[in-house]
Length: 249
Image 1 (spheres, rainbow, N blue to C red):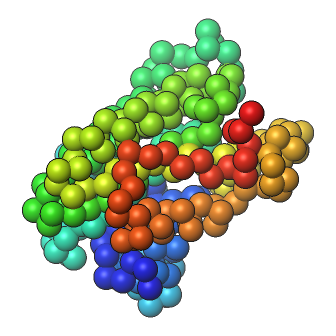
Image 2: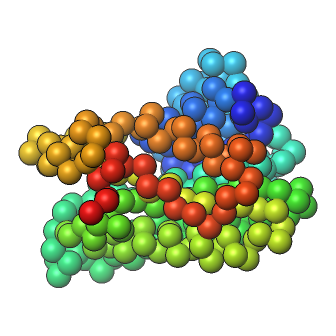
């Protein structure tokens, strides 16, 4: 039970990879907060069915009032915040298209959720973590940044920002005992991703990897648990690629 009694907030935790993070943290003894614009109750019930405590909070990470309420409700229920997983992001619903064809409003919305959301959530949990003298912030980047994936320029750019945000925030928060790291998944078969990808692209992703199989949400859980646990206490400012070797050239 590597996360026994730790309080772990997962944004975008209601489905897909976020749901896997919630269940994985619960299996290691964590008390889990499922934060999402989508209804968090089904995932809360799944966590509780596995014997762990859970709280669901409907929230839009791009809205400051929502992120502050997320921290307040977590503290009211559990009394502390040990880990923030900044997982909420726009990706699966985005269409692949040349950068000249991306509507400005779509660019702004991607940046609002994928970057502003990290900033607001980190600000919301910082006072509690500072008071405790310890905390973990785990940001979810993407292998797209390392590969320069075309036709997703807003998403790829936002995930490059996550890497920069992680390094900069880690430098700022080290003195408070707060570690800040990132996980960069490869293309993962989950939810909207699985529905919207052609068989041809699925196979191309597999063939580009050293480990030639599809990536699934459970492939990311071990790295998340490691970064959330005390085992990684002397690691900060890092981005760990979890993509089966697909980004190594």
